[in-house]
Image 1 (cartoon, rainbow, N blue to C red):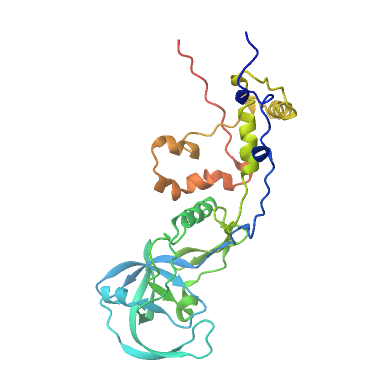
Image 2 (image 1 turned 180 degrees about the horizontal axis):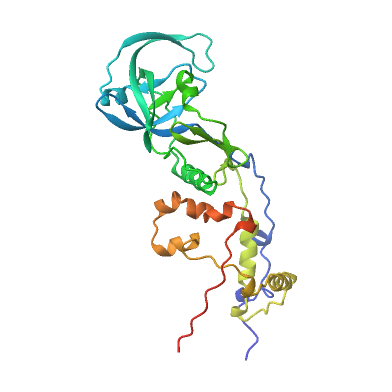
Length: 318
């Protein structure tokens, strides 16, 4: 067999290319990567709003920083609420020194607990066209809150869906609140109220990240290294790769992490989020799935409270 061969396929015989083998350096300008701050959970809940002959399911925001209660005009019209008088208020916007005078129609209605309509409160509210332009609809966040609350044996009073249709101000705030808040996590609390457990506080944001743009990134070094490795694989037949220090360290790490099946904990397929993919879940379902992002509810508990179940016996098919 002739020992001559194409130099292109032999890294030992190839002449080094000064351009491809040369180390590339490039400055990366103005990059940053940091976790988002905590998500703040406002005091929201779902209630029944009732007039003399109509009832609607609405979502309300409890705001102890507001002196008065406001209701959206569309809700007032749907309930056929008739104004009993007009009031002129001086509205102070955040950051503004001078107030803006505005006239409002005042209506009367009742707010009820959806699960126990006997728990009710009559209120007066001022009709407004808008309450908040901000969206407080976050299904993933609400699912996460619901999971934490259920682990603590609490049922949240808010579904987390829909816009805010009534702002309950300090004029009725104290009549709705019942007792002291219950701590769920370090920053998250459940406030007992006439309408149920109102979840509020701060929650760490585990998924979102803040990243600035990169003005320059160099990838030439990694690319050249991969190209060099490509010519060193055994399939070419020109160079036999020797065992490296990295290989021996990898094998040692693998052996150190071997465990016996008797020490394993079996996770049933219904609780295993990895099985969601094999059950035909689409991307939208996964996007809003607390089970997918956070795992089964018992993971929120201390490890000593995790369920212990052995592997099911294997079946032998003859």
